[in-house]
Amino acid sequence: MPAVLAVFWIKSMNLPVFKFAHAAAAAGVLYFSQPGALAEQAVLTIPDASPRSNIELPTAGRVRFAPDNLFAVDFVSDSVGWVGGYYGTLMKTEDGGGHWKREPLPFTDLIRRIDFVDEAIGIAVTSRGKILRSEDGGAHWEVVHIESGINLRDVYCLDAQTAWVVGHEATVLHTSDGGKTWQTQALSGYQGRDLPRLNGITRLEDGRLVLVGEFGLIASSIDDGLSWEVLDAPDASVTFTAVDAWRSEALISGLGGKLTMVRFGSDSDVEEGSGRLMDRVPTITALSSGTDAHLFDLTLDQDGDGVIVGQGGVVRVKAGLPVSDLLPLESKPGFLWYGGVSKTSEHGGYVVVGANGAVLKTEFDVSDPEPLVRW
Image: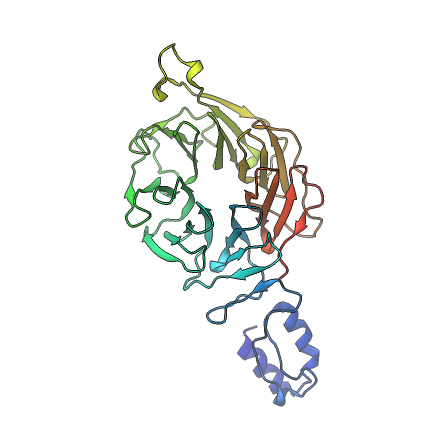
């Protein structure tokens, strides 16, 4: 019930406010200055953040009191990180999740992915085609590009000047000037009838780019995205959701628990005297994840160790191979899923975000995850 109508209804019934104030406050909808007063004396007010909350709310602009689903997370150290999701939700911590500051945005796009180069410079992409850039650690964001009508799904920043963004309708965008201008890079070599939704992009140690998406799409580029080689799809019915790489290999997650590894080889795998990237023939291998639940994101370290997140929990990965079943993170009723994951360091620490505002800190063994946000 909208707030104004609720107040009118209570007043028209001439009922004590206290019968309604507690439930309304719990839902983050209605707050009254005098909980025991009659309705005629009730005053609708916006409260300060709960004393138990560790979120610093903005002093101006829209505020959401109910937790929104989260998809985006990026940590550049054990202490400094950002999370984002529905309704333009964007929060930053500088103490490893002990306290968070909510950054107000002038729109309500879903923040899909965030990638920071360091503690100052980062890029975020949204469901309504916006590319946002910050140069002050996320205190302020500038919309540097709008791809009208396109849901953007992932961003990869190589450095402060160079980045790639992918999204629906086979969209690939590239900047080499810190986001001032963005060039469209056509997905050359794609023969499908319908343009795929591109969901993930990463870069291998040797500089090769790899992107993934609908219709089992895996494509790579050895010239910074000017041209793409579409690899033979192991299963055209798969929707790949995310990709990460270590050394010369990439691990790809997908809906229905699908996992695929692509090995591009190294200099020792090609003819003697030839170290050319074009000579490295990829090997594509379908892996068993041990689950048919949807997998949404993954992160790997330089040895291929990491975690994959999805419906109901996470899967541990060692050297690019799954080494656990789907492990639950929370024992809560309802539908649980996790849409994003980030390493907090190179020592096996991770932050996972997902449904109902979940922000959880865990280690590689994913035992006893620690909730980081108190709404």
